[in-house]
Length: 608
Ligand code: AGP
Image (cartoon, rainbow, N blue to C red):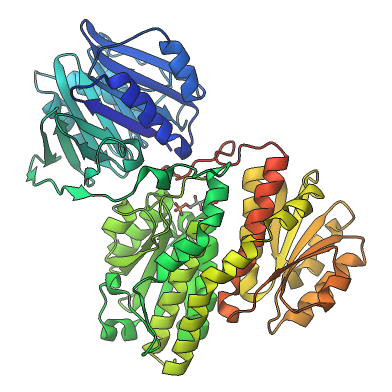
């Protein structure tokens, strides 16, 4: 996903812009660039590759400029190249623009501009934006941006500067995140708060369809229809060290270890033990409305889709409400059957995933109540849903999701408990679930202590190029999640399968070169899973088992066993996933992979 940083104020802009881009590196990118307002007009510099390439291109160019914009690009239209990198400028380099999103009607606009004498120099959709602004410019930069955007279909977060307005940044958003930072005699624009956190904690989240005119001492916001908006200045309380690695080698390892604290935050203030009940005021639903729910659709992508699958097991077992889990990318183009007793849950760590946002909007159009289970406060999905639950996992910087996943699962357990207590779950059953939830953080701390043993297991498997993950029931989605973790950070091809399905095909893959990870907790299907393990071993397959403490017998049937504490079987995924995260992490490190920023991946996929 692209990153945007803008600064206008009293200090040198260059270091602020470069450091801001570095704080956004986690979003994934393949080129970077910036535009500075100089004495003699705009100075633009762009480079392919990492930000340090841009710094090298700028070496020795000390700029006194106090005004500029910068960008990291994750290619969608046109390959990663200097000419395709942002900022894009008009012919005379009087206007520069950076963009995150996709202009869906850019071909039509490109022809329109060419008919008006404009020449495109890049393969990007973004370039048409700056020419449109130039076309409409007649002395007022904000009005030129407004006129240009009224012709645009698609998604955008943009920042625009012009040498004709040496102390102004015009910013606008629709479908891609953009936030203003308000300082003392200086103002900031960025894709997310991490790029400005060291300078200010006073922010304004732009809403879709809003345009901001930003100067060193002021900012005004209007809608694209030119209706004035009263800025919603908020104070954020994310300290920088929450963003830094806190001494771990990678953000991902830090975030794996943060999970006990994250899950304490996920349940904090939300459990009423006396009533065996969950408190989720953010759902904005009365008890009567909760009771009226006859069907739930959960939509998400990737890891969030895996937590959705776990949520299905929880809600169906505890609340006896039918749950349908849909890939957001499929749901948004399907003809969903929705009525006013259906509720849609949209799960998204970033709250900006384009497919999930679009699926949610589709459901809203059909009159469905939409609830968001989101991590990033103020994100689009959070703000557009009718209610929801923040998972409070804190910034998740590693592209491979870990703490957000377990926090999503915990929140789904809270929702299942609440819905169940609205129906047939008794106080004592509710209390049992709540007590088990409260124990999970310390149980995870126990599992994390096994990291050295898991690292040793990784040493025996990091040279393999395939892996199979098996699980049954509520642990089948954990098998999918374990496989996704391995494949996305170590580039090993890994598949998750329902354990019983192995004999319908995948068993043909089993030999000594196909490691098989089996999630085999002491649960109602434990003996069935043991049979699956025997089938693997009979074909020289090597088995790593995730088993419940006290299950000593399993150790005689597998190559390695990692024990997890016993818990309510619906909460087992919160524990069984931890060794899989750790295993994937150490295998990826042994393979020398870029763990926090795996190739081709972005932290949040804000394009289709
Ligand atoms: C998970 O490790 C991946 N990074 C990816 O599958 C991610 O879960 C997916 O893109 C959804 O992101 P979201 O939760 O921010 O919507």
